[in-house]
Length: 253
Ligand code: 13P
Image (cartoon, rainbow, N blue to C red; front, top):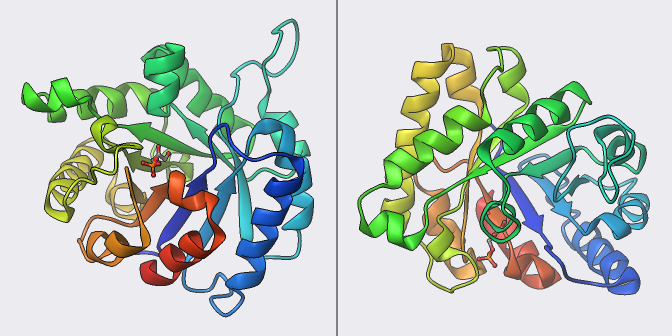
C-alpha cells in the first residue's frame, strides 16, 4: 500500500474566521508527521477555499473542494469550474458525495462528467461511492457500489484513472455514529479492488487508494486502518475538531 490518505470534509460548516483557525491548528499541530507518512487534505466550503489555501500554503496539508462543475466557463449560474478551483489553491475535489447524490439529486452521469472534468483540469478527484441502508438490507451493496464505480469512472483510461481516489462511504454510517465495522468496510474495499482489477491494468488497481468514510473517530481509526484494502479515511464531523482530526491522522500512520 502507498502512503495513507486522510481527508477532512468540512461540509457546510465553519465561517471565515473558524475555517482559517481550524486549518492552522491542523497544520501547526501535526508538524512532526510532516506529511511524509500520510497525505492530508481538508475540504472547506467554496467561499473559504482561498483563505484556507493561503493559510496552508507552506504546510503539507493540501486543500480540496467539495464539488465542481464540469463545464469550463459560461452561463452556469452558481457553479464553479476546475480552473477556478485550481486558481484558489485546490489539489483535490470530492465528486459524487452521497449528500450530493441523495440530497441535491446528482445523477451518475453528472458525477462522471465531474470526475472527467476534474482530471482534465488538473485536479485529483475523490469519487465517493456507497449504498443506502435500505440497499444494504436488500443485499444490494455490491450492485450499488459497482454501478457507482463503473459509471463514475466511465471513459477514463488506465493512465487517467491514476488521478482518482475512491472513497467508500456507506450512507447509513455517515453522521450517524454507526461506523461500519472494519470487517464490513474491508469486505467492500476488497470488492472495489477486485472491480478495479477487472476494469484497469495492474498498476491502476494496485495504486488507486480506497478511503473509508462514515463516522470515523479517533477511537476507531487504528482498527479500520489495519484492514488490508483500507488506504485512508474520509472524515466528516471529526475533521471539524483539530485535536480529533490530528488524532486520526496520527492513528492512520
Ligand atoms: P461523518 O464522519 O460525519 O460520518 O461524515 C462522513 C462523510 O460524509 C465524509 O465525507
